[in-house]
Length: 419
Image 1 (cartoon, rainbow, N blue to C red):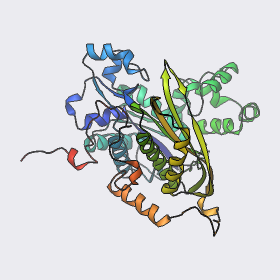
Image 2: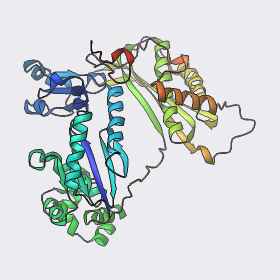
Image 3: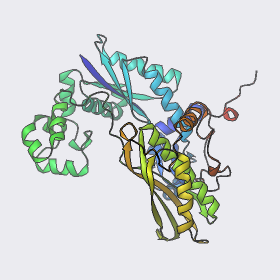
Image 4: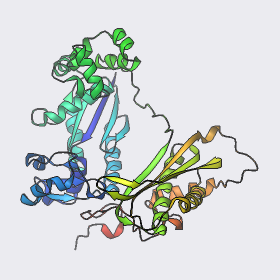
């Protein structure tokens, strides 16, 4: 019998900051979004003091100062590295692991005879002892139920010790009657409203509903969701998400930019990130769009130019796109407007394996060079090898006034313990 599990790290960003700062354990901590804008991760202690999620930081600054709450800028290098370590440890406890997001992963168990609650407690202990990451684990016969089991484990940490096993039918039925329909994976706000109008208020109500009837009213996905709640796996463990139809990378600047050279470096950075994603999914792009936001008044930008450029042939070569956007920037740039944001979008994507290039195409293709760059950056860290167009000063970089060191990915930041 196949059993699915979802393992989720509690307050992941906060937990990562606490790994190398044990003095912060049991103290209120918050982590902020890009440019120190909004609260995106909070500890239980900070939540108890009245700090909500997704609130702009300036709105809770008084509470932070009053209670001396520790706050950090986002450290994505640290979080990404700890996420990889988290998944490596999970692989020691199950047959297969698939990462769902940076802080949660699905696990697959086939033919296990051991009690799953015991397995879950072992996983918790192992992750706590090796990475100091607190987790919750939910077991169930389907991915949808595993998500719900994890949700129950997080909401009832003390009673469940962070582990809930819904492979037992009686346990599953009990919890389905307690969970409101809007908490089900894949049921959004609008869909939950529509279901409530049909007198479906809980996960159990949906479990009891007629799949064929709701399929006609909604879609085949609703029928699959009901079957998943009944214990019939409709979502395969290793379902591969469809390739993206467009790729976007953008970011607000830490301060106002007026120099065109700084804008070139920012756009070159964004196009490099887009091309890495493009190559990772095995695609080529023919169209690149660049956009700028400038001259901000109140909450609106008065100048928001954009330009779309078509290449003669689709490609995944970063250098080709950099040349295109540098030429495009010359057309839309106006000096002294105060630019606050820039971004790149790649469109008209085609699979690399299915495209036959033109023998006489003027577009450069350097697959060996691109592969070499990707391999080096994967091994030694992002932008260890990069195009000179990206520059080095990064005057356009985000504001990060309280970023922690890259404890695990930069030699100079590794903690040193004197003999």
